[in-house]
Length: 92
View (cartoon, rainbow, N blue to C red):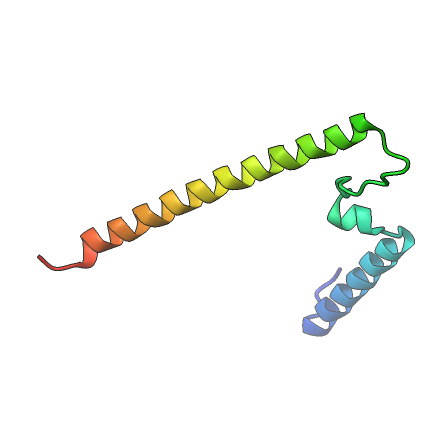
């Protein structure tokens, strides 16, 4: 990489980008690679056992409780934010 100026830098960047694209296209990515593995919530009732149904119900209950907790914290944080903004910007 000599001192070729702007044109040389542009050429090096293009070559580097092409090399990245070539290395990227060699390895095929699946949806699971991008989005992660799906959680199993579908049941095939004719094939599933009562243990499977109980396991899925328990997972759904835990997920619902976690979402409730997150919503509670979000409401508290929003309330505190508005209270602080009220204290700071409302004239007395």
